[in-house]
Every structure is written in C-alpha cells, then in structure tokens.
Image (cartoon, rainbow, N blue to C red; front, side):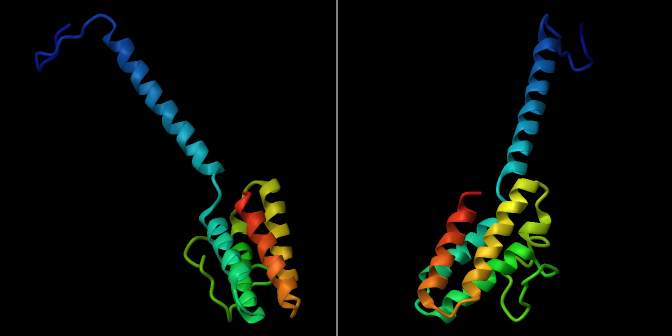
Length: 142
C-alpha cells in the first residue's frame, strides 16, 4: 500500500506500530501511577526540617524546625499551623495531610504531626530532640 510520500507499508508494520504505541501508553500509565504513589514533596520537606530539628543545639532550635515540620504537614488551615513560623512548603500545596488522598498515609502523617506537637510541648531538650528524631524517621518511612 503506497502513501503520498512514497512510504510503503510492509506486512506487520501496523501491528508493530500499534504495539509500540500501546507499550508507550502503558509505560506512561505505569509512570504516572508510580508518581502518584511517591511521597509528596511536602513530606520530604517536612522530613528535612525534622532532621534539622534533631540536630539543633538548643531546645529553641528544635522547636523552630519542628514548627516548620508541622507547618508542612498540616498546612495553613490545619491544627497547629503557626503563621509566626516559616512554612517551607507554602508553595507546594495545602499541607501534606490535607493534600493526601490515601487514608492510611493520612493516618501516618497525622501520627508524625502528633509526635512533632509532643516535641513542641516540652521544654526539655532531650525530649524535644527525641521527638524530632522520631518524626524524621516516621516521615522518611513514607
């Protein structure tokens, strides 16, 4: 079968073409599914700030970075959001918890937020730092 440009279809060409297009579509579908299952940038950023909190040299430093962690998790409309503290996730969404569609993930992120709050609720450096270490591990496991 000849086409205007002089291109000639050979037997099996259409089958290979359809197979290639279908394979590409399948690869894109799998890639988009994998991306949807990947941790949100907000979770990664919250984990970084929990790590900074765990390395802080004072309880004030631990609290500062735990506030940043909590702000990333709950977002500006969430419980515990502190507008006096930096929100390093401000341009990423509405917060990791409100942006999460998966109920199991939401429960895990809420547990991390609760642990961050426990670190914020104490003025004991070792307790606050231990909470920060826990929060970092919880978030990195996602």
